[in-house]
Image (cartoon, rainbow, N blue to C red):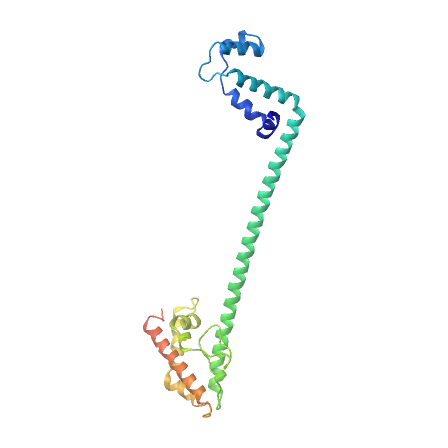
Length: 239
């Protein structure tokens, strides 16, 4: 039982704790364990080993002597375990760095792709206005352009709604942060003129009369965009 405890705790556990205790200075005048025990029997001061503790000290030393090879094997196993744990720690840290790098690169790719998609949408927006102005008659809802990202699917699958057209969404699309002050002012002024109710109504009237629902929806959305653009202008959107 004691040997098992020594193996579990390590012989050093017992020896170190016992070495920290003080043997009587006069014990060396006696012979061996019996001499020390006899010296201790005369009276025990604070910090001195008693007979049971000294016996434990002797047993630990004998166990170490008899089990030298076993102890060396245990030490090698402990050293190997520390090496494995350190290796695993380094590998785990490396994996965590790799995962962070993957997530960072993925976020960067998503951000780049979003910027590219937004730039493509803005180009389609500009081209859409040119096309709208060139069409002579018979316009459809899909011919109209709205300053939103992402674009809406064609009706009846989806229609832009009044709540979709806010100063935040329109500013984000029409006036991205990378625009200079003058370009910002020019783009905002162009949009205000394009969606001015009088000008915009000319395009609304090109929708066939038998599609009154489409006319009504386009007119409402155009008026809402015009109102929001004027609000942006008044609020310092030309900064």
